[in-house]
Image 1 (cartoon, one colour):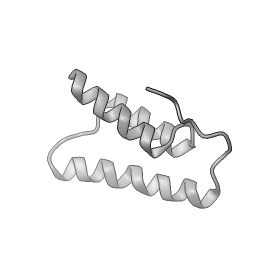
Image 2: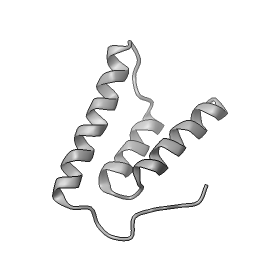
Image 3: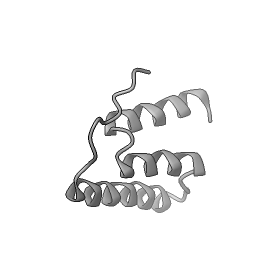
Image 4: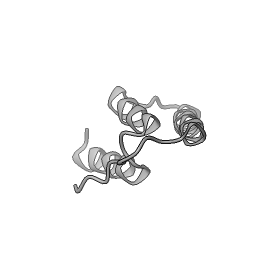
Length: 69
C-alpha cells in the first residue's frame, strides 16, 4: 500500500470530527453485537491523531478482513 500519510498536522476542527467518526464506528459495531478489535481501535486512533488519512484507514481495515485478521 502506498502511504498517503498526512504531511501537516490536522486542525482542531478536523480532530474533533475524527473523534466523532471513531465513536460512530465503534458504536455501530457495538449495536450489531460486536466489539471493535484492539488492532482496529489502534488504527482508528492513528486516524484520529492525523497519522493516517481516511483512505489509509479504510485500506487497513479491508486488508485486515481480507487476510482474516
